[in-house]
Amino acid sequence: MFRVLSIFLLVLFFNFGAAFAQTFEDGFAAHKAGDNAKAVEVWQALADKGDVRSQYNLGVMSERGIELTQNYEQAVAYYKAAAEQGHAGAQSNLGSLYSIGQGVEKDYLEAERLFRLSAEQGHVLGQYNLARFYSVGGDGIEQDYEVAYKWMLLAANQGDAKAQYYMGVMNKFGNGVEPDFEKALSWYRLAAEQGHATAQSNLGSMYAKGEGVKQDHAIAVEWYKKAADQGLAIAQSNLGIKYLTGKGVKKDNEKALFWLRNAASKGSGYAMAYLGLMYNAGEGIEQNRLRAYMWWSIADHLGFERVRDDLKKVTNALSEKEFARAKEMAQACFNSRYVECGQDSISN
Figure 1 (cartoon, one colour):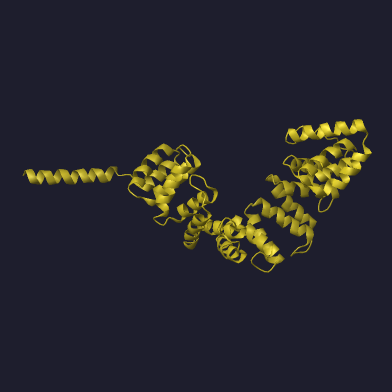
Figure 2 (tube, one colour):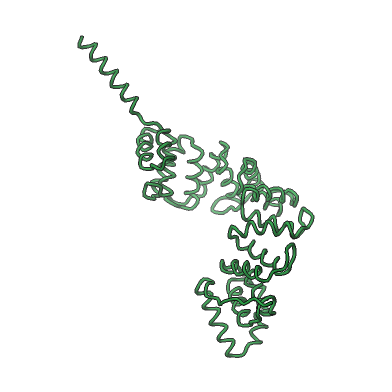
């Protein structure tokens, strides 16, 4: 009788244990419900028992500081545990940390090994990271555009917008493949339609120049606007120039100034060069050679050398007093990170 009762209690104990056992899905449900503390509790218990998905998720939470205190060393430990079990996402993320030396000593060769393990499992981020590694090269990795192209194509074919963008770049400039504007245009379009701002801007530029497609400034403006609305400085510059010149859109000096000032506020020497031209010539704005000097001087300081001849000419046109004032304006604008640069006055 005692033996029968003991067996009954043992079975009852295991049944209760099974009832209260927490699964990975329980942790995920808690995370989706916004209870990350509960998710960590569940996943930590599972990770300690070797659950690879829990190890990976705790690595992500440690790396990003979600519920757990941001701790790159701890993230590395979790990723390593998962990566050693073949988790492709952990391999890719761990490779990224090795590539920048975050939470672990920088090691490009180890990063390449991990990216490759991830990529060979078909993990899109692993493929993308491996492609970028070979595209850039350095630190023991020999630049190889053909290898880069192979892996970037695999990632792009999985629909990754970043990879599609770089496929556009590689096809346009002949990196690992013969230059092909039509293919470049096609890849840029795929990335642009997913909202990739630089792809949108580059697609606009190809339409503006008629590269791989019939020249169409109106379509160029459409793509520049999409990228400009996302805050991309080069697109804001190009859109401003379109409004200034009236190509593909009705000429509008106010909008031209708006977009060029937005781009200049992000440190775009290209936009500053055009602002200088507008002020120097009084093009759609009240002529102000001090402002022209200000923008050209900052652009030159930022390394935009194309303004140097214009900068010399406007400098020679200023009196000694005006030159001193223009230098003060340029310094104030630069020191304020392009905020205190004066109010613009549109001319009719």
